[in-house]
Amino acid sequence: MQIIVVNGPLPEKEQDACIRLITRRHPASAIDKLYMEVHEDHVDLRYTLHRRRELRKMGGYCISEPAAWNSAKQAERRDMIPNRLEEEDP
Image 1 (spheres, rainbow, N blue to C red):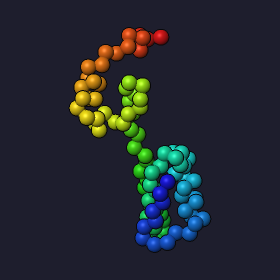
Image 2 (spheres, one colour; image 1 turned 135 degrees about the vertical axis):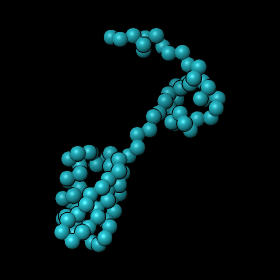
Image 3 (cartoon, rainbow, N blue to C red; image 1 turned 90 degrees about the vertical axis):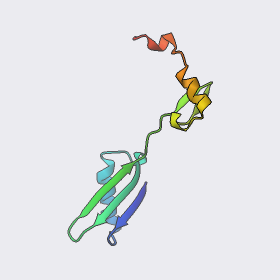
């Protein structure tokens, strides 16, 4: 998690309190950046979460997001025939 303090210094004790407040909502590993904007009487908190990427497995290998694939791999995905066992409801 990257911590960015804007508009002046913020004591470490207050930073820790802000981090505890945010990590109640999301685990620290899910937070990409935490922005702490210091005002005279309060601190505004803003954060961004790590972007979840869609990973696919083709040919026994995990590969990146479909948008980053070349045209041959995208055609392979379009032409895939689903496994019948995966279609059935338990």
